[in-house]
Length: 327
Image (cartoon, rainbow, N blue to C red; front, top):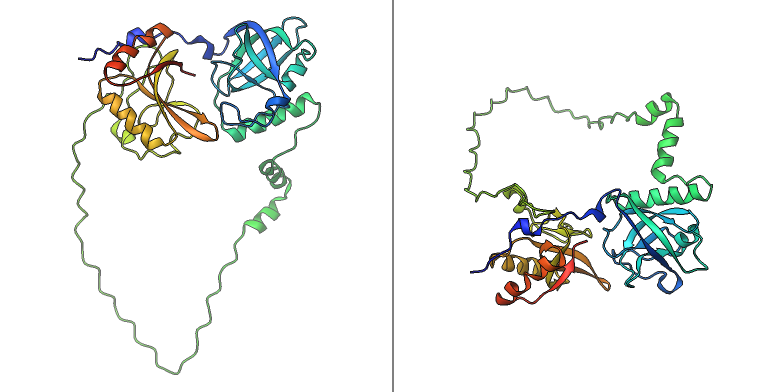
């Protein structure tokens, strides 16, 4: 009988994804060699944007990075993974490195502070980045088409709005004249009463616990009405960690990756198979494998040692895996 680790075993504080988290260490930067390449979250790296690579903090988190040598600071957004050098904690874009005046040195000791963890829509994020970049350059941000249309509408006088909003009444088409006598109006028969439509007989559905499992991030089971919704690539379109029925989850620390697919249906089938073997907390982590979407199946959560303790049980059930961090 497979023994699955309890949820309490896998619960601990993942503070680096909280506002106010502070980390100090060495920062480096990357530029021309990677300009235009795809980042870990699927964007194209632009060395002129204020972005950064961090090994574990979630994508779209904003960090205030301060150069401890000169006190200069800049706010950057996480959109990539790295650096993978032991003594470095963050890789900055060329634009961010310029703000910190660390181009000549190449590296500098910095303090990183999480200031925002909101995962905003790309369109909103692009607008805010554009406005922030314009403010830092001392110029006014160019308004979007929607903003321009709104301002034009506000400038219009009331009578013009009334005129533009008024619809012309459609004139009835002229009827051809005929010499035939008009038919006398007849009383239309009253509609027969119809029986009210019968309500469909409800089908018994298995009950599902909607409470989260105890412990850290945890996987929350959802009601049947959400579990039975159709699962498509749009359901898993973000760069997040999901349950097997497409709800965003926030597991903490590490888990064991047992498979990776570029086809969603194959990943879901394998995830359900593993869940049916008695394993708790089966997640699908979305990402990129080159130019293709990747759906990675990760089991459990905890620190590295706790996650590694699942590997023997997985091996006994016929699954190979390795420890991987939840972002």
